[in-house]
Image (cartoon, rainbow, N blue to C red; front, top):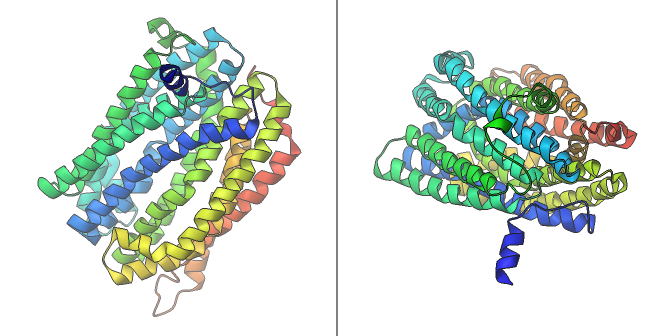
Length: 461
């Protein structure tokens, strides 16, 4: 009996049957725990750096963050395309198409890793100089990025393979592997930084090793799931039609992340102009922000898989019902988290630094963003439904409007208009205000396009 329950827990889940909200909730819970584990990577890095090395090192890791996110753009795109295709082909019970999709995703990822390392290694320091990275943190920031680039395969394959596993309805396995990697990351963080005194490079090395372990675990899991698909060299051979579909579905998601990461890099340049303490405050905010965003991203991913399987099974009524129920659950979770941030915010900031002025600044800026998390819950949930149905273009265009037309111009506009002798670079709140406005606009636009319903005609079959 216990063996059957255990086996079922780690098996692919058919989300085309049963009560929609229950299926979404059961899939989302492991995703949420997984995102907590993922965020612990960054959080432990920040705590170890802040406590053992200092605020300048904290700024170095924070300045590297947007660039690392940009490096993952290709793989986020492939992962998104893979999740959509896998969920739809799994829902349609199309073994051959499912097999070729998985094999081609593995091949594309390998090619992209090699190209990325070759292109990025000589460009790291020039990019940091171009972004006005303070001289005091430049060397640490460059060292952190070099290690992340060299170990990009671990980061890439975990994202791709866990996306494939989730596409078949198994969100528990990816959680377990991520928890294992998180424990490894925490142990190595403390060992490399506190014991071996490796500094910022030790933090990067710990994270990369942990990600490689999680990627290997995902690959082993896939080899044990072949009752649903085949995985041999034949399936890994590039096939034009599958490659094109992966790119067509994944490119908008990758571009969305690229747009977001580009905006972060451009805004990072403005952030850097406010000095080391403001950079450090933004690092602290990003760590808390990561936890606040977890329910939103978890429900968004769950609804992508849910929509994909039900679209594949041609059950559009279930898709619409699941969208309503999933969005309401996401909004409820985000509302609770927002209240917790407002009530316990200062205590959260103290976890990362003992500098009182940094705690006060971080908490003040965090309060500006708080209500925006509820808006993001709507955006992520409805975007997840549209992506699962095969409409990846609409979320991309909305992201483009949010970042290019709103966030970046508003941030620089407020900065320019509020410049004084006392504030030569303007009001530093411009960073958070611009982000809040873009989140609210994104929620409104996503709701409008979801209600128009054109996403229903985008299925890949």
